[in-house]
Length: 562
Ligand code: ADP
Ligand code: MG
Image 1 (cartoon, protein in one colour):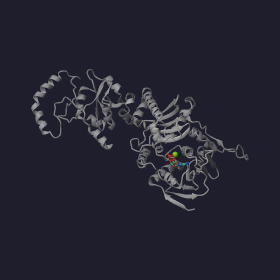
Image 2 (cartoon, helix red, strand yellow):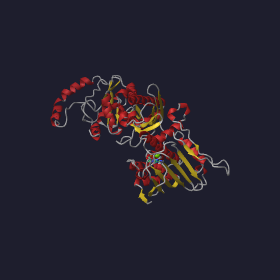
Image 3 (tube, helix red, strand yellow):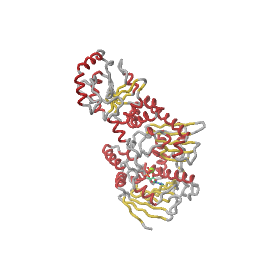
Image 4 (tube, protein in one colour):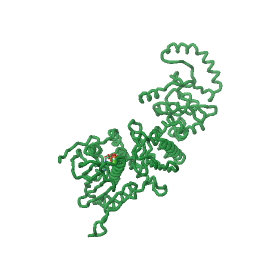
């Protein structure tokens, strides 16, 4: 058989370099990544076989097996799952599919300088490559279920890998790590020790629903080799009661399904009983992924039907503004053959979406009341996404508003809720004032702010493009209008100075000539010229009509292609 040699993609090579020079201090996690891939491969095979019984594959004993060889210093993780074809190995293992990789590498380099590289890595599906943290060579032998011929892939993690066809590969995939030389100083990292393997599997992969087997060390010198034993308890965490499961276990499941290496911010459990039974285990991550606002962000949770994995990224279960939520939903009464198209229409799925949405929102509310720091993290990472819900989900608008907070002239670094704003409103102030702009600084320097600053009236400082949209969609809060200080006529007279009204009428007469002249001169560009009480320092400013698009909104619509 011929062996072909290929170059890694540039980005892949850079990532490999990072792995080899191990940016991640906890090397044990390589095993979690390989087990995670094996488990995915078993899920996929079971599903494919369920959907196509004629598939020539053995699904009678799907499992993962870990073998170590002390003398050869190798560790092998084997599964009898879906496997990969020759082409797939090249595509999936030789390249980094993620389009954001270049951005990632840049961020990673910066993070390394700041010492926070660990978390970033997990976001980018470099799971398989993590083997190079502990191995100086990796070999992968795989055969796609249903195909006759297999493929061997090898690499030393440098610039190339080889591919070769093999005739006698068993169904599934085995990944063999040729471990780096033992570190006599550090016995803790002896990955040829069955004890070590057991410990790592228990810690990181206990919830995997497939058996993970290994052969334990013989009890004594000369004893027969023992039978393989199963290391994990295999219990689906979402089906167990809360007090049976530790936070660590939940967090490991989160890492498995989200490909994030960091702890989640919050774990949300939901057990729905009745005619349509389901269990959900959802997670709010602690960091927004870098591509949350890109078109190809893969959103959605995993869908299971009676413990059988059905699909990743099931979008139908949560609205787009909650796209940062990860997790698992396991339904009792759905067909194993459901497709994405059917899901979008399904009445039960719509009911589940409503219930899950309310549950997530009520959890965020709880975080807000119980833990200011955690709420601040949540809002910093996901507030911008959540605010989209103010526009798109009128049913839950109040619940979203209740957990939304905004920068304000009242405090430099502490955002305010609308409720808090209203509480602080001055006597005679009827409306909630805001101004939108690119940054806090540019808003604060706006001439529109002068009179408000002078009279000590609080103004919300809104800097996200979506702010322009939701303030219009929402319109008012508890009977108080949301008003832009840059739009329409602002009458601050009631708010502070009583004689100002009369005064202004007098002024209007006095300046009628000047205003008329200005109107003529600027006829092409503006609708109207009027005297204003909103300025205290600047002589004049341009104001939008109450119903005009603001410049930032015009930009956003243009960017969205509308
Ligand atoms: P991720 O798991 O995040 O997709 P990995 O680097 O861990 O990234 O794996 C890359 C891809 O290689 C997987 O998505 C999968 O398609 C394929 N792969 C890896 N390991 C296996 C395996 N044991 N069986 C089948 N496919 C695998
Ligand atoms: Mg993986």
